[in-house]
Length: 493
Image (cartoon, rainbow, N blue to C red):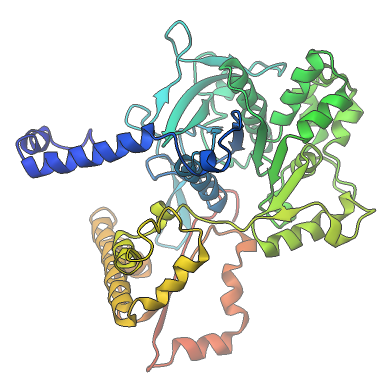
């Protein structure tokens, strides 16, 4: 944004006292936030030594200027970092610096999806290089993996939380290794394995070389689970047995599972595991068969190294992302604990929340404050108190409705404006402009389905009962319009 602002605009605001006053207020608020070391964590654990948690995830949904996310898993990770910053929870995060992001979508005249590659401008992105003692960008080698993989390190400050991003697109790597960090969720199985090796083993190596110690490691899905191998290897190198090192690592580890279908859990062929881990097996003090058994699914006839099974075996605490998902996950993985009933399977649940300041519209925030501040002036800080949200009933229905309609009109105006801009560059696609929302009516009940287009998201569920759908859509007195929005993975036809 700063690079695109005309210089004369910045020169003009320098002489605008109102603008400068607002600027100073905002910067003062920001500096107070960054320097304030009090917060929920210190209030509840004032005498504890540092309990830093390492958080590993393949994607982070922070802001559209950092396209390192595909869906809900990434937004959960991004909101975790923001909320930990607000609460003062000591956290350090590790992820990937995807230069091509996930994918940019264009719908062709025949309705098919084209995937557009847009390379991230590193100089314009809100990231900084992590420097070594010589003042050069920090580069590490992923330990004991052949052929050698080298990783450059970048950093994003998410409030008070540092997020370290791994980048393989550097001259030190052979050409095929430079592409490891290009794109999120590649369909190439070998590339996927190399990504997870870099994220897990390389990410742990980065924290180690930077001297960042942590008390527990949180795996957001199975993608970064190889970090556990590197933690075990470090203890074995110091003289511990594999079993003792494994127990220590398990006892300080958390695993959040997300995907309730087999297709969402990576399974790597044994020959690929041999190709990359043949030098790693003996570093753990175990043989090949013992290593491969860590990822063996006892109830799946398909051969291969299952990353979710591996993550479950390498961590002590496991959780799903909702009460229902916890129940489904216990059924899915029951065979790993055959001596327990399904209810006793050690997979808990924590229902997903969101980072309120990120997702709350400013007009709704003002409306809530108007009615909440008299009794709860700190309602945003204490928004996890259920009693605060019972005060919603004190807001007059008319005022809520006015804000709802205003925001809905703004949304549809934004959609139509984007279509007008698209018309300039896609003059031959008038039918797409209609399908893309040009004819949406702000006075009609609007139902939105905005999810990634994977089969398990069940976009086609609405066609399960065509007669009922026909009644809903063809009622002239209660009109309804439905918006479908989402991206399909390039490999998913």
